[in-house]
Length: 330
Image (cartoon, one colour):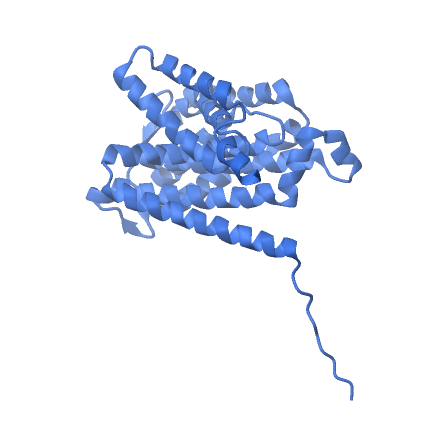
């Protein structure tokens, strides 16, 4: 009688290294979330609100970094930011659905639905053409929102406090709970983004930036890669818009104005395309510089922001993330 023994092949060194890297990534994400959660509990309310808005805006900039890895810079992320915000506020006010997690996911999903028809067109363009087309979409959205009285016109409309898993948020700790929700979603998206960037599809994006024609010769599709990145960026932007509206309690057309999109690009340039964590650190830096500059230099806070950006570009041309990414390679 023959005995059949199934011997499964042992994982090679590359697979073990990848699994170990993902384990470290997950532990690092959980550790960062726990540290920020404890700091938020003891920190002042103004600081938790500032970090909440920085995390929500950082999600939008994370989508921009995803596209920057392919060699394009969108100047119209305000469109998906506004779509996510308006979607969350309208679902809350018109449909009566108030759960914070559900509203955030709905904002991201509807932003993808709005961006999907434009993805095949935008995937064909690079450089200034991509930037101007996305800017045009954002400004068209701004114009429509300004003219639609059903959406509040130029004044927008308010949104009340959301709930979480069927429970009303306590008055004394509502801001802290929204802080935890925003940080939790931002941490999850950061971990997923890092996994995607290191995957085969994510590395194809880098190849598209370096030599698009060679990617096609090797059997890849540059357009498909850029379409996917555009939709990922739309989902991140919608998430950020919904989370920002829940913290602010108000939505208006300025969410899609070109200056709003410019701030997201500002953060992405500060961070660079190498590191995911640098995106959120840069978003916090922007909020801190803007808040203190407007408080102490109310008539020239834009000058302080411009000098800060010039300083980073001069001494860190590849962004803040290049500081520790270089160290990891050595």
